[in-house]
Image (cartoon, rainbow over all chains, first blue to last red; front, top):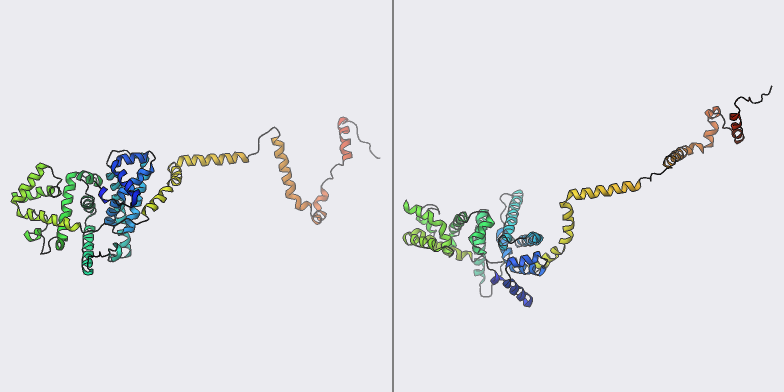
Length: 227
Length: 178
C-alpha cells in the first residue's frame, strides 16, 4: 500500500516528515518507535492518519467518531510499541486494530439506535458538509451530494465483512493477502467475498452505473449471481 | 450448463483481473471467457463503471486539533502505565498492602521487656481507679453508703510497723487489758 501521494504538506516541517517517511519503511520506523524514538511515531502518524480516518469514516459515517477511533488506534499502536515484532506488515496490524474498533463501534451504535427507536431514520447531518466548488453550480452540487450519500448508504448496507473488504480493496488499495489477513480468511474466500460485495453494489447502484436502465444481470435473467 | 459453471468459476478471478492483480494464467483464462460470454463481458464493463462511481465518494480531512489531541493523550501515558502496571499484578499489590498493614500493626505493639508484666498490671490498676473515680469523688454517695461502714478499716502506718514484730514472735501474745 502506498500513501505517500495522499500526504498533506503544511510547510517545511511536513516536507521533512514526508521525506523521512519515504526514506524509511514502516517496519523501520516502528522499530525506532520501539527503541524510544517519538519522532518516528510522528512520521507514522503523518503518513497514516488520513487513510485511517477516511477508512473509519466510511465504516462509521461520523467524522467525530471516526477521529476518536483513529486516536484509539494510534494510542494502541503506541502502547504496544515495546512488544512490536515485524512479523506482519505494519498496515496489516494497524488496519486490523482499526477494523475491530470500527465494527465494535458500529454494533454498539446499532444497539443504541434500536433502544431509541427501531424505525428511527438516519440523520441527514451525519456526513460532513461538502461545500460547492467555484465552478460547480448549486444544483450540480446538490446532485453530487445526493450521489455521495447514495453511495455511502449503499456501502453501509453491505454485510460487515463485505464492507470492510470493499473499503480496504477500493479505497486503501491493499493487496489480497493483506486484506485476507485483516479479515482472517483465505485469499480465495476473500475473492469470493469481494465478488459478492461488488455484485450487490452493482445492482444497488444501478442508477449510477447504468443510468439507461437495469443492470445487465437483471436484464439477462434472475438475480445477480447467475453468471 | 457447462457455460454457467464456467461463469461461476470465473467470478472469483474477475475482480483480480479487472484491478490488474491476476497472474498471467488467470488473466488468460478470464480473457478467453469474456470473449465467449457476452453476459460476463457486460458485467465486467459494469464493474468498471461501478468503480468509477465509487470514486465519487469524497475523502474527509482530519480536523486541525487531531495531532495535538493525540500527543496530549500520549503524554499522559506514562502515568497511566504506572497504575496499569499495578492493576495488572494484583497479587503484588495485595502482598504490598499486607506488608504495609503488618508493619503498622507491629509499630503499634508495645516492646516486650523484662518488666513487661508489671507494666501491664499497673496499667490495669490505673484503669480500675479511673473507672471508679466518679464514684470516689462524689462525697454524698460515699457518706450515705452504708456498706462502707462494714468494711474493716485499713491498718495505720504505725500498725504496719508493729506487725512484723508480731510475726517474728508468734508465741508472744499481745498484752491484754483486764
